[in-house]
Length: 236
Length: 115
Image 1: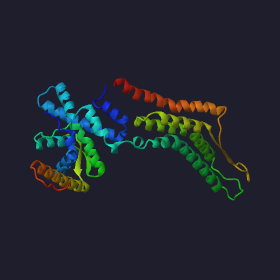
Image 2: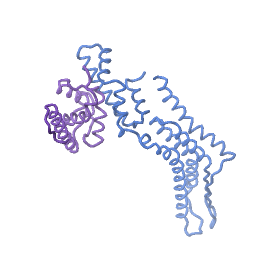
Image 3: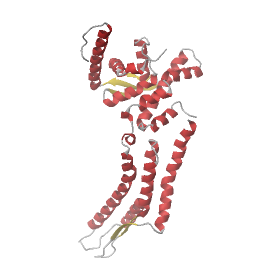
Image 4: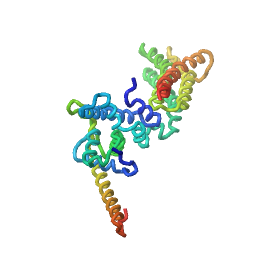
């Protein structure tokens, strides 16, 4: 069942008002409505009439929406600066993934170097290090792109943004995540080199990963969007 | 009862709210009731529209808010900050000049001080 101000909330979010301002507004409207109901009941009206009178006193949906939507200071960053959606959804996620790759590679190299007695000695690495580095690389190749994609989806849905830039961003992170190949071979003999390789290619197994990424990353967004935004359109 | 026309209300809600909250910490419902009581319902509002004004004043630093429970009911109470007091003084000055100017016109005075 819809709460009294659910539609107002959707209307404000769609108008570009930031979710935190909408939440605060609806909270105070609900509390005000409680006070008005109590007052109307105290004046002798039965609960149904008291509720109707309280809602009427609070203002029409149009007035309540206009009072908030007419104030640009409450708009979300995406509504104030439409170009920011391109940066946040399409440019930032691949950069974040690259940054994580770079930080992991640097950490591994520094760790290995710090465990050599001399520059050409075999590093004395603890047993857990190989497993840890392999797990980190797997996390960054397989899990992190999906988490970044879900992050894009959450921001886009919370702010009820048009789907163009979020979809582009989800597709970019799915491709970038599938095509990025990072692997490590630790040195196992004195004077032997370890190997860290990074490449971008899409063939064979990466194509399957791309499909998997697309399903894991875009499907939740599309389903979520269908139920939340599509559901509101059907109700109005 | 007719609601007061919005075009005549520009800047007035801020003035009234700051003035009332300056007396004591209040929450939205109390504020609207106070406005209705003190203006003998000359000024009536769609009561919910007061919140965007309060939020905007808070954002500007003129008001601060805190959640407080009184008689088992938790509400967001607003109080005036130092910036709010200065803003209120400016609004009162501007309002007094405006009403003086309008009174002058209504009384048919030839010279009205520039606003």
